[in-house]
Image (cartoon, rainbow, N blue to C red; front, side, top):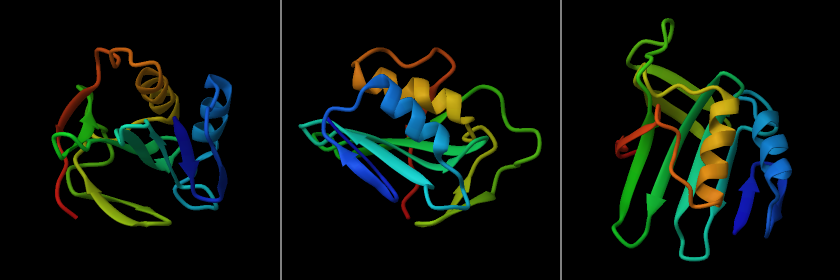
Amino acid sequence: MRFEGQNFSELKAPTDAQIRRRVLALQSAGRHSYASLTREDGNYIQVAGGRSTCMVERFDPASGKRERAFHDKPHPFFTDGTQLVFAAGTLTLKSDEWFAADAVVEMFLCFKDARRYPMAVSWRPAPDF
């Protein structure tokens, strides 16, 4: 397992505490605005943004499917089409694709431990860039 991020040194076998600390340190505007956790087979989960403005995607190289996380509580202020601006670029999100960092930590730990994602998290095909 490999954990990487903007301006973070790569970790080959990250602990839960290291993942938690680094994901919680992410900020949309700043030195650390994205991170990814990758398995040996190339499957990964990634986050862009930080704090209360995070977007999460996952990729399965066997199927070629890239999916974006969403939940059942659309954000009251970020309507469909609101843009997430971070160091690697700009993404247009739907109102139900915004996550807080603590929820992202849980998704990353589920991925790391090959556990089921939280019940509130669903996945849809990610839009092409």
